[in-house]
Amino acid sequence: MSENPLPELIEPTDTAKRVRAGKVSTRKIEHFVAPLEETPLQSVDKVDETAEPLSMWMQAWRSLRTQPLFIISALLIVLVITVALFPGLFTQTNPQACDLANARKGPAPGHPLGFTFLGCDVYARIIVGARASVLVGLLTTIAVVAIGGTFGALAGYYGGWLDAVLARLGDIFFALPLILGAIVIMQLPAFRENKSMWTVIITLTVFGWPQLARITRGAVIEAKNADYVMASRSLGLSKFKTLVKHVLPNSLAPIIVVATISLGTYIVAESTLSFLGVGLPQGTMSWGRDISDAKNSLRNNPSILMWPALALSITVLSFIMLGDAVRDALDPRARKG
Image (cartoon, rainbow, N blue to C red; front, side, top):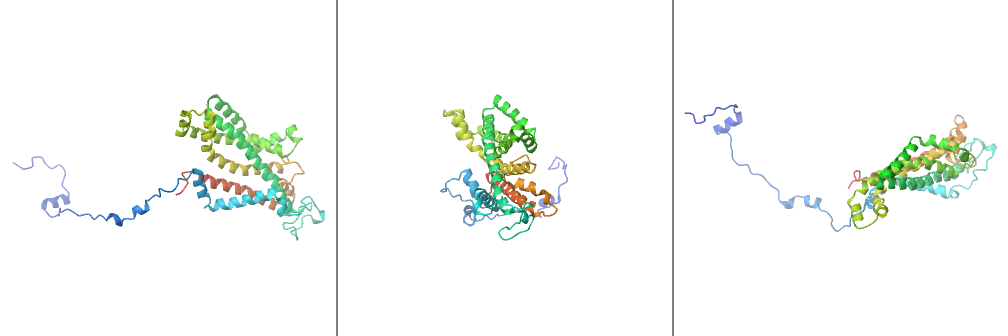
């Protein structure tokens, strides 16, 4: 009788045949292990346990101060704000002193950018016009953050009928685009007969707060379920105090990013309204008003329109770049190191 009663169902491989025939060595292979002191992993993976942990804001600042995008945009914004606050440091020329003899002339001593079609100094008007444009954007952003942030925080934290009412109210304003809605509001008799910087700020705030309210609501909903909020409530802190002391401070990152980018949007919106003749009053100097006045000289002397448009573009681009840099610094997924 055969030693293996079961037939081989699978044809053995060449290697298996060689092992059976004793042609392949089956001796044990020795493995080399490097000594522990020769491996550099301990020095690479070593963590300095004596250093104090950094907060989210400190980590963001450490990331921001090494980014060229943030440095360039911050310097440009500081320059624009300085020009808006202290125009006398940059020009001594009266922007309203116009001489028709200088109409559409090129650069001259003391007038580096030439003259408008009415003989006004272009450089002086750009310097003085920065105040109205930047001030409208800044005050509108503050009002939008105050109103939209309050409504969004209350809706996101308390929920229920309050959330439903504020959500439907925001949807009403979302139905109208910012510029179109602002044009409609500015044509109302109460606004048309009393044009001023404040009417433009109020109009832009009315149509600007729903976006920030929605961002704040989402950030608050995400933060209110955290463990530190439950611990605060278990220690007896009221809902409102918990919202103010714990939830809102940990929801500021997306609010700051949106507000920074929106500031440039509101500067553009003011310039657009002034360009269309429904924004700031006629006597107020702004970049949008200068662009509107220079549109008739676009073919003959485009530099009159180019300089205020360039100032507007650089300012808006600076705020957008700053918002992008802040967003990358405050986003834990984008943070390196």
